[in-house]
Image (cartoon, rainbow, N blue to C red; front, side):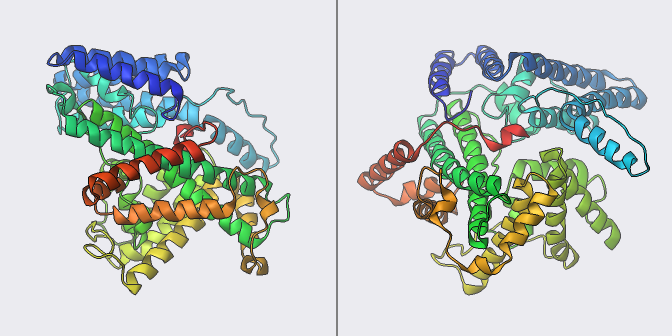
Length: 487
C-alpha cells in the first residue's frame, strides 16, 4: 500500500476516525494502531508479516530478559542473541547473494570454479528500518539508557507504526515510546499542520520525483547503448538527484504529517540538504535519522573523533562505507559511501565539521557569493556521487561519467534523447525551479510550506494550496513506488 495510492487514501481516514473515536482510551488506540500497521504491512506481502512479528517478539523478550538478568554475563548473552538474530536476518535476505557471488569471483582468480547457491527471494520491505528500530532498543537497554518496555502492544507499535514502518524515519525508543504510552488528545492545529505536510510530501513525490524519474530512467537505462551527449547525461544526473530527494523527503513528509494526525511527532529526517555549504552540513541535513543512528551506535563507540588522526580517518571511512552498504548489496553503494568519506575528510582533519546547523543566508533573502559558491560546489559533489548510487554497476557509472566529460557537455540536449517522457525537459526544469524556490523561502521552518503559510494572507494561502493540488492532478502520472522501499 503506497502513500500515493487510492488504497491509502481510503485506509488513512478510516483508521483516523476509528482512532479518535477511542479518545482517552490509550490502550485501545494503541491496539488499533498495531492492527492497522500489520494490515498495512501485510498489503505488501503477508508472508513477511511473520518476520516482522518474530523480530518484534525477539527484541521485546530479550529486552525483558536483559532487565531481569542477575549478572552482566547473562545480560550480555541475551543482548548478543538479539543482535545476532536481527543482523543475521538482514544479512540473509539482503546480503547473502552479494557475498556468495563475490566469493565465487574471488576464488576464480585462483583458478577455482565455484557455482554459488543463491536465494531466489525478494527483500522484505522495510527490513532495514524496523531492524534498526529493534537494534537501537536493545542497545539502549544494554547500555542502561532506558528500561525495558513491559507492555508488548506499546513496544510493537514503536517498531511497526505504519507511517514509518517501511522507509523510516528510524525512530528511537527514548523519543517514540513515551508518546505511545501517553494519553493523546485531538489537536486541530496539529492535525491541520499534518495535512499540510502530507500535501507537500505528495507534491515532492508525485510532481517532482516521479516526473524526474521519467527522465533519469531514460538517460541511465539508454546509456551506453545510445549515443547520448554529455549535456544529456549531465541533465540525467541532475534529474536523478532531484528524484531521490523529492522521493525520499516526500515520503518522510507524508510519514511525519500522517503521524501528526494521530497526535505523534516523529523525528525530522530532512532539513533542506541541497542548500548545504559543505558535505558535513549535507549529512546533518540528509536522512538525519540514519546519520544520527550510525553516529550514536557505531561512530562514537569506535572512538569517534577523539583518537589520533588515523583513528579519525578509519572511523570516518567505516561509518560511510557501512552507510553505503546499508543501502544495498552492490559495489556502487560502497563506492558512493567511499566518495562521501573522501569529501568529508578535509573538513574532519581541519576541524570544520562541527558547525551549527544554521540556515544558509539566515534572516536574509539572498545568500552571499561565498555561500552560493559553497552550496553549488557541495551540490555538484553530491550529484557526482549520486551517479554511482543510481548506476547498475561500477562499469556503468565510470562509462556514464566519461560520457559527461566530453566536448558534447557544452551542447544543448536533443529533444529526442528524452523520447518517452511525459513532460518536456524544460517543463521539468521549470517545476524543479519552482520547487527549489518554495524550499528556499521556507528553509527556516520544519518543512517548506510551514513558513510560507505564516507569510501569506488567507486568500493567497488558499490559492497556494489549490495550486499545489492542481499540480498534483495535472502533472501526476502513473503510481510509482518509493525508491527507499528497496532498502
